[in-house]
Amino acid sequence: MNKQFDLFQKMKIKVACDNISRMTYSYINLDTKQPTVVPSKHYKDILDQPVEVLVNDQVKKQFLSIMFKQMKASKEEEPILFNKTLLP
Image (tube, rainbow, N blue to C red; front, side, top):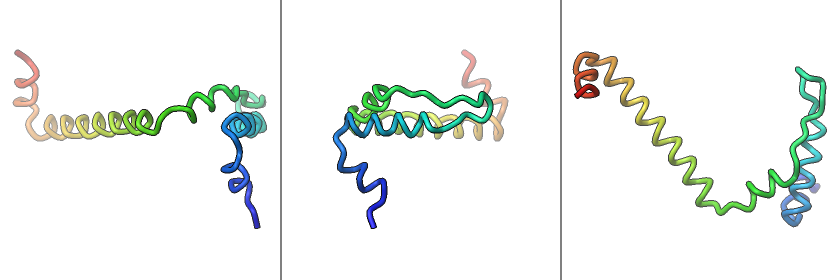
């Protein structure tokens, strides 16, 4: 039995983006009671990006998250020394 995703994978990028846009439009926002409108160009721009660009952004976010957690832990363990390292 074919699923919608199986058909989606075989579509060309423009047709796939149009379909994603229609799926998004069928979502009714609970707060505004209006359909969510996202143009297919938005999805095309995302899907046309090289994988490295998306991975690079995710790596940056993960790195910042690790650094933030490390700084927070350092501040909790030794707040005086932590503040001294930040101030000249």
